[in-house]
Image 1 (cartoon, rainbow, N blue to C red):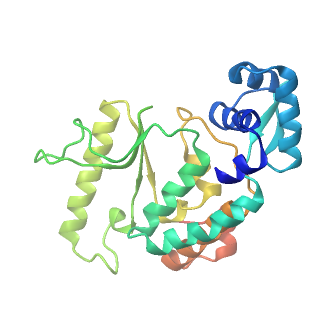
Image 2: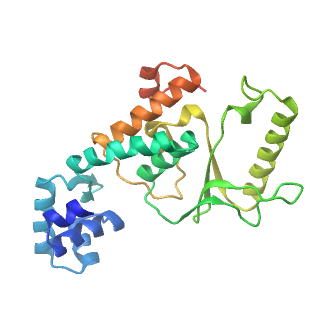
Length: 241
């Protein structure tokens, strides 16, 4: 990250990278993982806290150093997020994955995964929108997965889709895969964080940051347009499906 390298020397930058990647439970642990002296780790932590790159959070009896992206950098990221959203072919899936990127501390996943065990009754492969190797899968399910809609009016096609969904759930249960199905009204960071299984490690979310707020606005607008639910109800975290 250019902003990080511009403000800190390589040793200090590595302290931030270690905190970001490893989620240490204390500065002493951070020093041990990063193989630097405790004195240098504390000095780097103080400097980063002053410049908005790190915060301290209570973690049991310890104080955990949490790496952040400072708000001035997030202000550059927020318009890029908007551009990517506008260009996305599947906007709902895009929003789901950006929420997951914020909330889940894991990059060990496959996009549009087609596993050998995941086939429909004709032997054709089915896929997950995102599959974590910790055996957790996420899928966005549009309203057609619940039955016919104004846009999807074919009853037979709806029944076939629901049959495939039922088989996918069954196959996941057999393979000990947790399948998390995300519906339109779930597409908000405040809601999706509640749906993440304990198998996946959570990230600290900077809810005051411009990036988070921009993502919340995009999600709320999408849900409001798709469901006609009031945006304030969505932002309170209590939309109805």
